[in-house]
Length: 300
Image 1: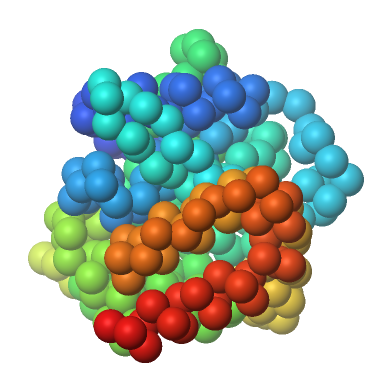
Image 2: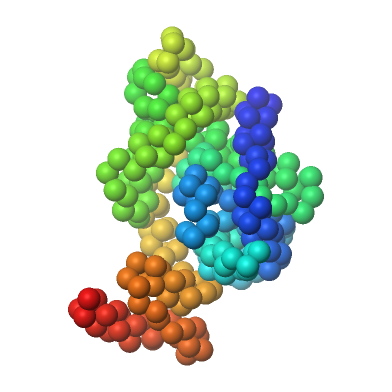
């Protein structure tokens, strides 16, 4: 696992924009977290006017009963960094739960499918927590690579295996992705995904042959049966789990009103006044905001 861990440690600890690092630290400290992982489209584009995505990891257990059943806890944050307002959507959860999900020990695909993609560890409270976080991300890569071997072709380019994996996870989750989304993800750094697959397969004990860019994985029948059974459980639970998370977020998304107001203004130009009532009761306030948005759109 050393080569895989070294590869991911270098990637996770690469420099990011100072505004991103500072925002990650401030948000993690605000939430009582011990580390901040930065991922998503802004990691690739560097557009600080967009919405940043963070995972904040912490010690201990989730603070609420529902959080222990339906993680992560999602919130929206605005922080001022160097005179610029940085906006972020944040998922928070205990590191131990994150690590179990990364290992494939839960009925969840989102952690290992997300963190087999590029991320940056922008802040951590100490070296030990950094090491444990990096180890968890390495476990995510191994889990994803096993299922890539299951879903992938008999022989093909590494990108063919990742493409098959992402398509399978989209189908298993309650997600609507534009056709070709997996190609967009892979297209940002094809060389990275080619290197990662072979490193992850070696670390996960997946035998394979390689001839140039063509790979073929060799899974014994008992392992195929075990992976197929595990995938069937994930597929059966995936949509229901994501639906439950959406329902939870409707009632517990901290900062939902400010997040919605920013999204509406960004996409339509309509400034929505964030009142105390709308902050406390976003669902009750939604019809009035939708009426205001309809009128604005009609006038335009």
